[in-house]
Length: 281
Image (cartoon, rainbow, N blue to C red; front, side, top):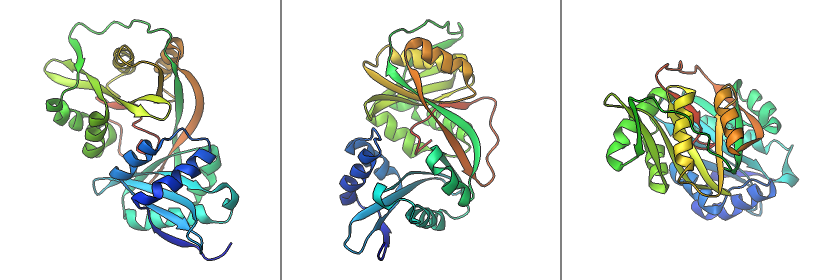
């Protein structure tokens, strides 16, 4: 391999990184790359002729937390250290932030060498819902559509669940689709947003205080979501995963959440039961 140049990912590069992801059989559309690009910062690696050989991006959630994702290297140039150089470029500008990413088996070794450690598993469920098993919502809990005036409450609840502010992401997902929230005793206690992504609809983030409420939120969203649907959920959310299988959304892949730095403690009043995306977590 000749000289390698690392530079900032620019909007005119998105067609090139789309081709890289298509070669890996990722479901991302150009619109999905554009969505992630607008919210984060990225790098590309190019050869001496300017050919794009790889990319990596990251997203800042305040000064203390961030996620890393969309790490790709051209198939014909893998194993040459390009992925490590891209990760170094990302890590050099993330500062002291705690970082999180979702790793495939192929990426585990690279991320471990970059200081990440395994945290928990993620199951990717997708398909066309063939059933929507009813789950009783507690009588003191009301489900309704999210409106723009609800966003501040969603920011707060999501911040409790994540341990950092994802206001820009939550707002972008809402603008791209919509969602449902759970209201109890004058407070928002859960929500599920949805947008078009990949092969169809992606439900996420899903934030709730327990699995039954997460199920109720997703079930409500599925009533208005037609066709192919995807939800990425924690592997230890067994009740939720079993319900998704019953509803017709099969588990098709398992990946690993990894972290670098001290992870915020989980809050008993709110947990992420569905990812925004594996890149944005």
